[in-house]
Every structure is written in structure tokens, then in C-alpha cells.
Length: 119
Figure: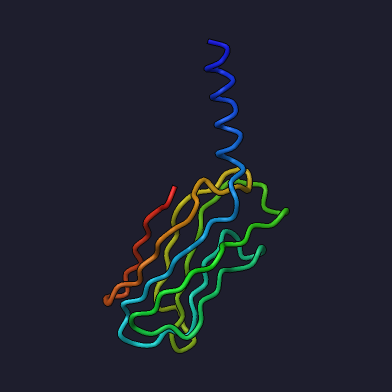
């Protein structure tokens, strides 16, 4: 019983101390997007993708910072012509640490944002 409790405590500790998650972005949008920002907090910076056209695929790391010690969710904002084309909140982090290894994000032809978690 003692071994099981210690194992569970260790798993809980390591699951809350994972590295910054990677995001892989896929675009099916027929028109050009100026940029896409993916973030945990605006104050910690963004994973930035620029000059996105149909068929684009790229990857980046979502930054965390020491100031981010709370719980929250991620966000994505897609810009076209200087205005927000699409946006969405997704995922979850706790105590400033990601619960996911990464995310696969697809921006569809219709402008929907689809997110798949990689654990």
C-alpha cells in the first residue's frame, strides 16, 4: 500500500512539471492569414506563425514564464487583414505547468479551429 501511495505522489508531481508544450499548426484556409498566435498567457509571450497560406504546416513551443504560477487555459488568435479571423480557448494548465506534451491545431476552410491534445 505504501508503494502505491508513493507511486501516485510521484506521478502527480511529474505530471505537473512537464515542459512547455509544442503546437503543430495546419492551415486549410484558402485565403492568406497574416499571423497566428498561440499562448498560455499574453504576458509570457506567444508561439507565433506568420504568412500562412493553404497547406501550411509549422511547429513552435508555447512559452511559459515564472510569473505564470496559476491555473488556466490556452488561447489561439488568427489574424487576417489586421483583424481577428478566428479565435478559440482550449486545453488546461495547472500551477503554471502544462498537462499536455503538445497540441495539433487545424484551421479549417470554414474558419473553425480544431484542437487535438497530445498527452
